[in-house]
Structures are given as C-alpha cells and as structure tokens.
Length: 167
Image (cartoon, rainbow, N blue to C red; front, side):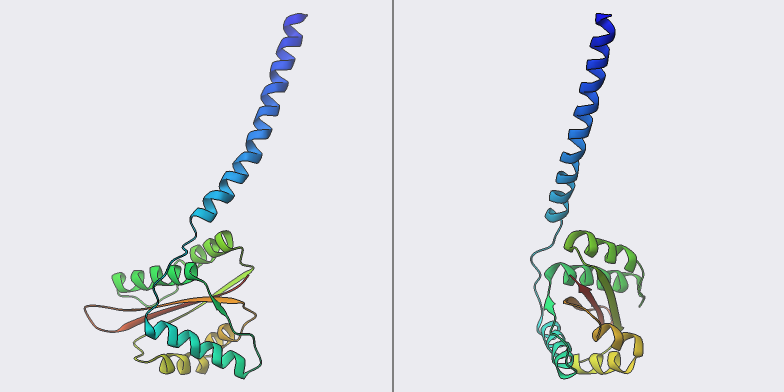
C-alpha cells in the first residue's frame, strides 16, 4: 500500500515538474526569438533615399509614413544576396522571411517588393507605382518597412528587396 502511494506521489511530482518546465520553455523560446532580432543595419544613401521617397509618396496620398526596422532591412539584404548569388530575380523563400518577421517582430501582415537593374531610387519607385501589386504593397496598411539595395559586383546591376509589415 505504501509503495502504491509513493508511486502515485512520484508520478504526480513528475507531471507537475513537466508542466512547470513547459512554461519555462515558452519563456526561453521568447528570449531566444528576441535574441535573433537584428538591431543593427548599415544603410547606404540609396536605401535611405528610396525609403524617403516611399514615405513622401505615402504622405502625398494621405497615408502614414513608415518606420524603418533594421531587422527587416537585414532580411531584405539576405534576399538580395540570395538573388545575386543565384543570378535570379524572384520572391523565393518569402514565406520564411515573412514567418521570421511575424515571429521576431510580432508583425500581423508582411508583404514584399523586389526589383532589378534600376539605377536611381526614383526610377525604382516609379516602376513599383506603375505596377498595381507593387503599388498596393507601398500603399498598404503597414506601419514599418525595411529595404536593402545591393549591387552585383560582377555585373554592376542593383537588386532591390523592400519588405513592409504591420506591427
């Protein structure tokens, strides 16, 4: 009888211990997610000018200006580097970028514009605004954005990735 009671108490102790560990795990996961957030990004003048032009356009049509987030620019840069390395222009792995931004920054929505081979911030903005889907992203219900514009050292052509989010 005493052995059965001890076994029951031991089982109860194990169950309680497992439950308390699971709440600690969620705290640990939240801490790890915050640690993965990129807080530093070095913007070049073309990136800053493009962001400024996007915000000027948004203000001109009665929308809020967007705040830049370094983490989103870092994710944009990763995609530019991927496109340059693979000699492609596409949205490959957008779902992974989007999920990362949702998880790390708490974004509710995420969208993305890409472009290739534009020489000036104004020319890429004009092209995006001429495209209904790109324009919808620029004029979307967003609060934040990030951008990276990288030049392929072999060709001199520029790759653009612009990510928008509502946070």
